[in-house]
Image (cartoon, rainbow, N blue to C red; front, side, top):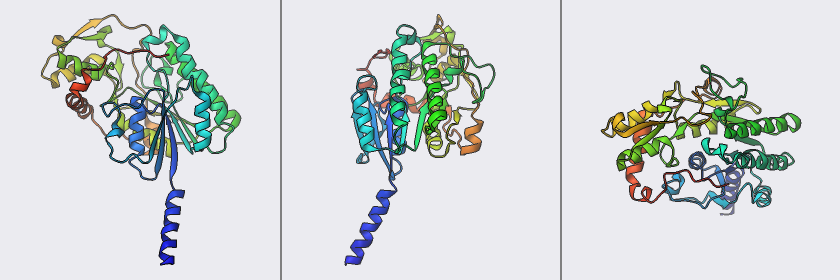
Length: 348
């Protein structure tokens, strides 16, 4: 009897010792919540989510559909206003891995209050990384950058392309990238960086072009296409990006940058056209051209060969499948969606 109990205790001890603790900053964001959900697929993962807003419903948080959330803990903390509490939490939990999605991420509003973007994306980050570089528990830090740091892409570019931002948002992210790289070189900070193209999918912010187009068509409202929708984007499904980010976190070379992107880009007007046709409408009936936004880059087409070759990553969700998922999600949550704002609401 005692031998069986000892064996059980030993097995449980081994299981606990194999548990990996990961802190996800910005866990309430579209990308953060999907990454949390992916981590929870693996029973060896213990996940701690941090965001400045209160935890939301399954309309926006996929992991809330899970019956068992015993391996997930959530903390409402703001990087700008609650940094001492966040640092105390990190030192108490001692995570082996931190993934940072927390950022001010909208382009157009960054022209109005650029200081807010730099405060979150650069200044708060500097406080965080300067603390973490003195801690021994951290093994991996995945930084979520953006291809917007490159500015307009001429052709398809790889990770060696120079930084050339066109907006305050992009400049604040570029500054963050440079800051982290100095800490990597000077102190051996365990940095790995990802730049993914335009993510989409169910649970995305409702003001984004894909969910907003579905909602407007369903509501009989006109869709505004900035610059006529000529800008080329590289849309990639959120779960494909999360899978890539996890592969980078686990197997990426420290100090390297990895791109995640589909094989080709698509003009925004063609995206809306595809959505309209899938919903039984024509583009000219549901959309109108309006002036382009300041600093709008003409194209984001980046090369993800490194992630494909080094990590064996490939996007698997087709654009048609992803659009169908978004339409189904809007239909399933229609009553709740109608109570939500479709406008971006800036919070400093």
